[in-house]
Amino acid sequence: MKRPTLSVSLTKRKTNATIVLMRIAKVLSAYREQIARQWADRLHTKAGERYGERPIEELIALTGEAANANFAVLVNNDFSKIDSFIERITRIRLGSGFALSEVQKAFELYRTILLPIITEEMEGPELLHALQQMNYCLSYTITKFSDYFQSLHEQQIRDYAQNLEREVEERTSDLAESEAKHRALVGEINDGYFVNQKGVIVFANQAFCDMHGYSLQEVIGKQYLDLVDPESQVEVQRLYEQRMQWGDTKDLYVYLRRHKDGSSLPTENKVKLMLYEGEYAAAGICRDITERTEMERRVREAEQLAHIGQLTTSLAHEIRNPLSSIKMNIQILLKNMLLDGNDKRRMEIMAHEISRLERILTEMLDFAKPLRLNLELASINAIADSCLEEMDAKIKEKGIRVKKRFSRKIPVTMVDHEKIEQAILNVLLNSVEVMADGGEIEIATKQDSRSGKFIRVEIADNGPGIGPDDLPYVFDPFFSNKKRGTGLGLSNVRKIVEAHHGAVKVTPREPGGIRLSFTVPVRERL
Image 1 (cartoon, rainbow, N blue to C red):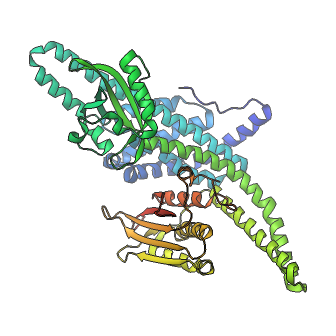
Image 2 (image 1 turned 120 degrees about the horizontal axis):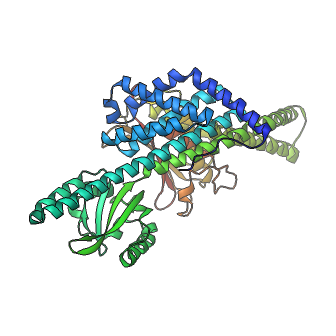
């Protein structure tokens, strides 16, 4: 793959970049042992069972080597060490049965450890440059690892296939036994494997069935397009028809598969034409890329946050001070001048609008700055109650009815009390602002009934709702269909929930309105 260049052409910018690189080198050197230790600890406790089974001393040695390789990229633009490390660790992990997503997550942990450190040690353009360097480094590392892992994985499959072909040639008299070995081999592949003949699934391994939520009996004989999201069906069918007609069409493509529960999930297929029981069919390897697409989204958001952070810091300094001065003087005039009628009303409107501008600036700063959680044991029910108390005046002003359904069985859990409160307030404020007078809000809490590992908070209203065209974008920064909205309220909600390792979603509510729900994990200690 093409390596990203970290240099610029102009002498002055080279000098500035050199200074920043020296600063990055100093920070990385100072925290080298801490980074390696934290990285190893998180691998051991948070990266999956396979990492948890490895000795901590082994993990510390690996994270120390990876940290040194990243240092070479970030400071010296030297990719040789990280290339060597990727090739070695890929063979080790693939040979030990690690999934691609597990190792991708392990590399991504470096960002979660380094980001708070460089945010604490740097600021302004220096911080922006350091974030860009870090994102370049991780993007290169994870992409190269994924490509190399996939190539080795595919080579394993090719080796398996070649071995099978030789066995079939050597043991034509024992075809049934050879076929049984083939099915057992494919069944052990971590990725889904399928054979599509005349538009029908005639063979599939267990991984393929699990990816779509069906049993093997349900999958065999099923129309292949029934397992494809409607959004992708036309393109997938076109590729299938071309492959059956010409045989040399695009063999690797990304599409949305359709799960039995109706959800759509990003998927990568690598498909080849083959003979199956005497007739041509499309045989493919089906790989879930949900985590990869999510990781790419987070990388893009991190880059966007870095740019927005620089802008909002400047805006806060340049705009907040004048606004505060104007607001203070208006308040003094309202107290001291004998204003009445329209003159007094105009002054009050001015004070109100200035307060609104200050809230907009606060939302922008909350969205842009890195989120740091102050975790403590807290009751989700108590937090929700305090939010309703804070919103009480606005709710009564519009005559809104509130229905509470709080589960008494919810345990206390480790959360950032203020951040969760901010998330619930943002959702309640959205509902209150869009609803007509006399509307209704329902707020409920409950514990996940299947595993008990998550607490769910649901807030529903009977307002105008959100159109189906807008629904996919409700969490995007600066997206809003309100006349006076900033589009940052729900973005901050998602940012807070995901920082707690939870999930958030919005669904339409019948006959009108929306239902927003989010989860936080149950944790009694850090």
